[in-house]
Length: 93
Image (cartoon, rainbow, N blue to C red; front, side, top):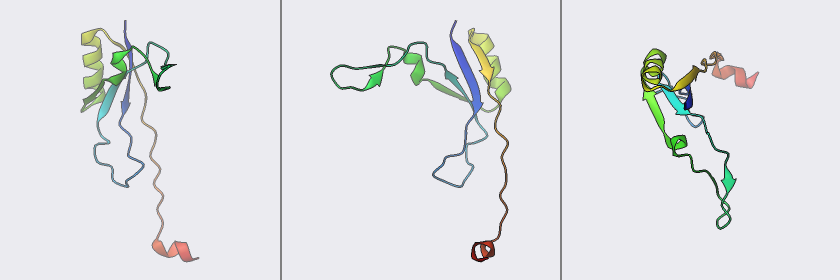
């Protein structure tokens, strides 16, 4: 039985915006260990499910899909966001 994890899409480190962070992602866990290709040296495996990421509007929708398709999934809770409130003038204290 395939296993997967469901998590909330994190904010991009390259931007301060929070667009698309409300989505939930179902991602399959790797079943094969990665190994180096002898010719190129790139790491890879024969597991093609590793390339699949399914996006859902809610965690419940992702769980419903997993149970319907017979996928054993666990939900990774979203980390608590801490707001760092400061004024621009605080840079010059």
